[in-house]
Image (cartoon, rainbow, N blue to C red; front, top):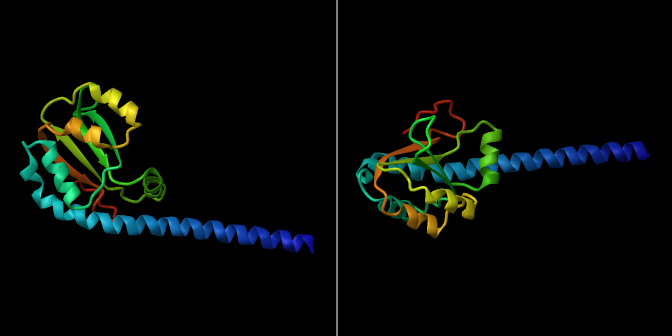
Length: 164
């Protein structure tokens, strides 16, 4: 009797685990399918923000109800030590992880600035733990955009990884 109960418990646990994983993937797909059409409508207009302050593009993102959750700075060329690029993540870590774990496309926006990002960003990044907030938005507000790239917006399971 104990053996049957034990086996039933294991089967129920396994089914519950698979159900949760399936739900998490479904949540990712739903999130992706709500976000990416907004990003795709922005692609044709991105060049109008070149040579303009970041605040203009940021206001455009907000008008589309697109929230930045995290950011990461990187050099224009690798290897390099001077930051010119900021990658804007548009989802929380747990959703991001589902996309990565399942080899899905993960959408984000990569912005290259005309001038080097001031070194104070290192301290701000540490203080905010890489989370986007009003202080970070203000820090970038007057920086001029050189280029905007939309990454991971070709369909969550599409093998085409072309940057737009």
